[in-house]
Amino acid sequence: MLSGYHVSRRRFVSTAAAAPFVIGGAPGVLAQSASPAASPAASPVSGAVSITSEPWGKLDDLPVERFHLKNAKGMEVAILTYGGIVQSLMAPDRNGTFANVVLGFAKLEDYVAKSPYFGAIIGRYANRIAKGTFTLDGNTYHLAINNDPNSLHGGNRGFDKYVWDAKPSQTADSASLMLSRTSPDDEEHFPGTLQVTVTYTLKNDNSLAIHYTATTDKDTIINLTNHSYFNLAGEGSGTVYAQQMQLMASHFTPTDATAIPTGQIAPVAGTPFDFTQPHAIGERIRDGSSEQLLFGHGYDHNWVLDRPGPDDKSLIVAAKTADPTSGRVLTTQTTEPGVQLYTGNFLDGSFAGTSNKIYRQGDAFTLETQHFPDSPNEPKFPSTTLKPGETFDSTTIYTFSTQ
Ligand code: BGC
Image (tube, rainbow, N blue to C red):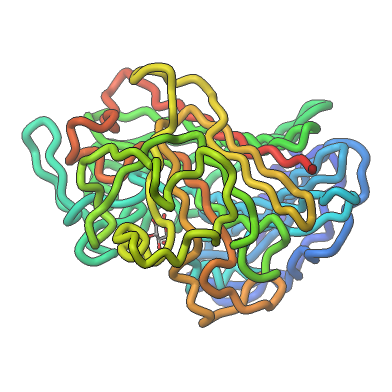
């Protein structure tokens, strides 16, 4: 029975929670709630800021909850305690019609069985580490090779596959959900016990901020991001190739054929990687003269954000993306040095998403703010080492507007 759990949970919930769904299934196995998907065409009613929650199934006997953060303008974000997943994000178009602009699933069991990191928190190390090997303080560590021949997104069971503790709060202007977990020493063979928090804050200016903090008890490496797959025309509406992308980056990190950076910081000028001025995402994506596009099966690269100096960690605009049809605009700000633009190249049409539409290549883009891939093996890249006594602190803000 979950009733005691619900009572304490509701202490934090400031408006009436949605009617709880019935949870079934045997202990120790995944049990799915009968919760419906957020309707992509629904228009949330505007009003006061609120945060509510509902049971959303179980993982290994642990209850999973779905939190609904809503602002006064009717923008609504659904976040799962499983993986800190942004399950749905309702944003208005230029006529005020809301659509769910992130890819995902309507059921927990689909996230567990087949999600390519939809909407999830990625850690301890977002993106790749070459051959799953790195050396720190003279010790060599071997991570799981889960993306042959490399390690990807924290290994076999990264932060996206755990149930996090959740603490909601709100002000007149914002709804927040703080997720936290302790990642034990040697988890996925990373050194050090890591205390991590990830706080999502939805504000009345239609911004969704993600604030990450972490501390460690041993020298370790860290790279955290969120893996939301955006489609500004709405999930399941087709490709994002006509959506306009601008990246505030005059350099990128080219890779080898296994998506590991060569170590070069290369200018984008004169290549299909030049998004310093807005371009349709699909405009140059089939340019067969680009070895890098062939290696990535499309865009799947790290751009080096233009910053005033190598040590600058201020919050800057990294990207602006616009959908000419709906008028939705996404502005991405970050304190991170890089951003991975990935164009859903490996969505192969083998499953359907939240609104039961089949997802295919190019149906979304990610803007994974991050330190550069494979930094522990590239001394010239900004460091991803975290030491005891230091606090990892990183912020990314996704703001929705219209044009
Ligand atoms: C990676 C891609 C990968 C995708 C989903 C991205 O961050 O760069 O290569 O396919 O995540 O796993």
